Each structure stands twice: as C-alpha cells, then as structure tokens.
Image (cartoon, rainbow, N blue to C red; front, side, top):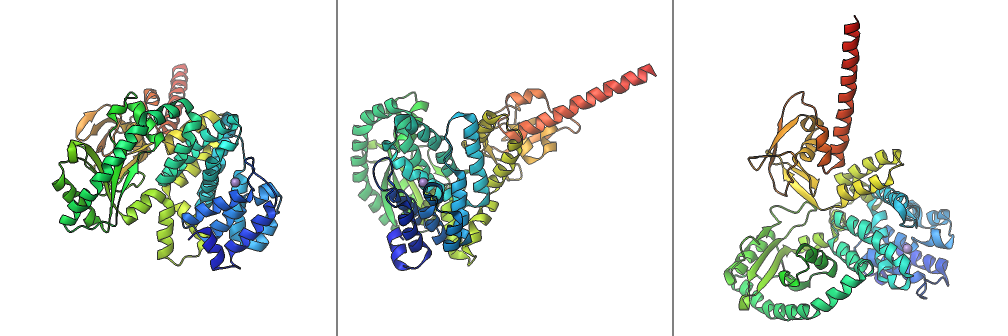
Length: 495
Ligand code: MN
C-alpha cells in the first residue's frame, strides 16, 4: 500500500500520526537541493511502504531524522509512538552521519551497522531506504561529498542489500553510484550502448509474442513476460572481465517469464527449448541448486529468430519477489503466515540469519583490536560482502564460502580439527592441492592425519578469517610447545 493510503486508511494510526509529527518537526527545513526536508522523510517511508514493511517501520521511516536533525527528544517519540518505533528511530540515529573517510571512520560505520543489523533488521531496512533517496538526490551535493557518499553506497550499502538478497535495490544503488565513481567510463558506456540497447529491445519486443505463442502451444499461460535491460554498473563489470569488448556481451537485455508453479517453470523451459535450440552450457537450474544468496530461477540462452541469442529467465511470482526483495520478502511471507507480534519479528529474523550472527560475533572480536581498522574493513568486505561460492561435503552439506576459498578454508569451516589436521584434498573425486580455488558445486573431501599441525605457508592462500585465525592460533601453540620442549630438553641435559 502506498504511504498516502496508509495515512488515509487509519487517520489516527501510527503512520498518520508520524506523518503529521515529522512534517511539523521538520517545518521549514530545506535540503541542499532547496526542496523541503520533509520530502526526504516522506520518500524514505514511501520506499518502506513499497517493501511492505509493518506500520512501525514505516512510521520510523517518517521520523528517522527528527531526533538527529530537528532536536525532537527521543522521549517524546517514545511517549507518542511507543517503544517499538522509538527503538527503531534510536537505532537509525545511532548509525548517525559519520563521514565515510579514512579507515577508522569506515570501520566504525561498518561496526555500528553490523550491530544494528544483528539486533533488528528493520533498522537496516530504514537505513537502506534512507540511502536510496539520498542517492537519488545526490546531484545536489558538492562533488567531493558526492564521491564519498557514492563510494560508501557501492562498498557497503549495495553489498549489504545484495547479501540480504535485495537484488533489485542492490543493483539500483550500484547504478546510482556508478556515474559518480567512474564518470568517464559512464559517459563512454552510455554512448557505446545506446544504439545497441535500442536494437536489442526492438528485437526482444518482436520475440515476446512468439514466446507467448510457443508457451501457449504447450498449454502454459504465464502470469507475465517482460524484458529486462542489464544495468550499467553490472554491464561495466562484465566488460572489465571481457577486455572492454562490447561485441562479446550479448545479454544487454533478457526476457523474464513468470509462471504459477515450480512445475510450470520446467514445463516452460521445455516449451522454450522446443521452439528454439538452447545454447549448450547456458542452461542453469537455480531452482534445484539455488545460488548461495538464495537466488532461484531457471536460466537458458536459445538461438532465437534470425539466429540471434536470447537469454530467458523463468521463475514463479514468489521467486521473483524473493529475488528482488530477499529478506524483506521473507519477512512479508512470515508475517502472512504467523500471528507473531510485529515488534519481535525483525529481531528474531536477525537471529535466524546465520551470517548476521557470525558477522556480529566477529565484529565484537575486532572491536577489541581497534588499532587495525583497515584489516577489519578488508576482512569484512572479503568475508561477508564478496561474492560467495557454495562447496559441498561428501555427505551433501553445503558450505558457504567467499570467492577464492580453498580446501583449507573449507576444512576450517567444517571443524577446527579438520583444518588443523588437513594433509590433502579431493575435489570432485580427484586429488587437488590445498591452495586449489574452489568453485560453486564442488564436492570437497578433506584428507586428515591425526596430530598434524597447520603450516604457516597456508596463511599465504587462505581466503577466510576463520581459517586465518585458527591457523595463527595453532601456530602460536606450536611455537609455545616447541619452546617448552626445548626448555625441557635443556633441563634434562643439565640434569
Ligand atoms: Mn535521512
């Protein structure tokens, strides 16, 4: 429901009262662009309503800058809007407006974010909605600040959204940041692709009715077929991998087919392949094997009319919503299913996401060694926000690892003893070196020798902090024991 309707539906409700309060509190305050400050509060709440958040979250979105920027006391918010809304507003206020400059501030920002994340996901939803509007209005800020905000958005917020499975948002944030971070590349890309995009879209528009007919011939009536253009930021990343050769990028736009059921997805895939030959190696079943971040869909590329390639994604409505909104969508389904009080859901959800808890435990550890903020930042980016792979144990358990992870990382994620005792590895049944880079879907078996100690050479190639920490700890013990043994031997010799 749109914000306006929420206000109208219950004129004395939480959202309507927060609306009036925020409008009054911000009063004549203006943003740098010259528009009323209240517009920003409204836009933030509008996004939260779009994500179908609960009333408390939408209200907190309206109020999110009142304590920080208008001096309204948190106590007043608590008295007028209750404990839950006050908790959220306070959470957002505490995240604050630290400048994204220098490793120390960056690390501090991230730490606060993780803390909020682990307590109640709704605080992060509000912060993401807030950032989305700030990015949409970034043009009004001075250039130096634009760069800083864009960088933080790209490094932290877009990654966080991605990790939460909010792909649509993550892509939009990256796209909004891209022109500020790479202005020359952006202009080049725009000029280079304008015509191609146009051609591509025209072609797919012609394919669309043919696709609908091919599906109908098999009795499949999709909920929707749409055409999705690739985003500039991800296109740019792809070009970097392909030596900036735009000829090599074929999927400037793809077709998306939404059907009613999982069975319908496979039936549609069959119908598509019957109509046009699939390109070998391009059929991906992310329904049977979802991506580590939970993405589900069937992908195929076919040789369409005129022998041009067409990328087609097939999914259910639920998958489409989940792929776009991620955790926010789970939240929604959860809410429909259970009668649980709203106030606790965000907190419970935060506890259920293993990586959020892992992240929280981890930032606590780092908070103790405050002297290395760069290390914290780097480790964080690598461990939690980087692309993930998914390796499998011989028993079929999936282990979630960052890109570049090796059998040693895998071993330490199973158990410390497995890591410490590792002497070799089998990847998909074949002997592999311990520094072998794993891929998603690899079946990994670790060969263990009892009493074996890790080697310090492993530190050169491991990709996770868990492995690194365990290796260092074991090595420390090893030198300690060696020293003790040496001392004991001396004592014995001295007699
Ligand atoms: Mn704000």
